[in-house]
Image (tube, rainbow, N blue to C red):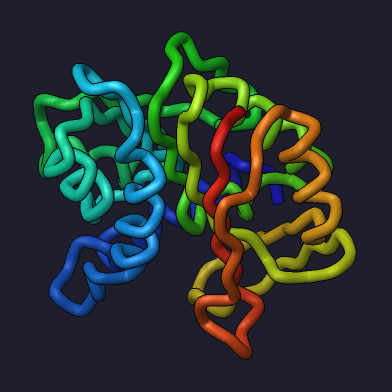
Length: 203
């Protein structure tokens, strides 16, 4: 599936993340861990970017509580419509992260359950771009599939067609190092499911 097709699938189920049935605690503990690595950064105005921000706003709220100026990015129009209703004063970008070019440098980037939807062939180049968009000592947290080899799949487990890809952990770690960053934390946080989150810090 192309990114715009994934976005259309999310448009159909956008309300799922905006209702009472959604667990807003999902991913918060992991983000709080990532923020501990950012405490040594210089004080003052700090910028954060939520990639695949969706509409729940939970990570944006967390980052705002830590005095970040936060921007959101998503390709799904309905997700962004709801996100803007929740945070009308913030900047949101409707864009495909594979082709979007950051115009700023960020202290903190989150890509929770988002960049694993991009085409497998774009995984490594997108990782390089995102690390390049970090300020020195900047932090990024993201999720990936905890697989050994590159893989991708399409299914209807969410009720709509959805695509996932992962470059393999060894390839991902090598790409992170090549891009000038270090892995600070890697965890199978839903074991035995192959859901992995990583915290990386730019050199």
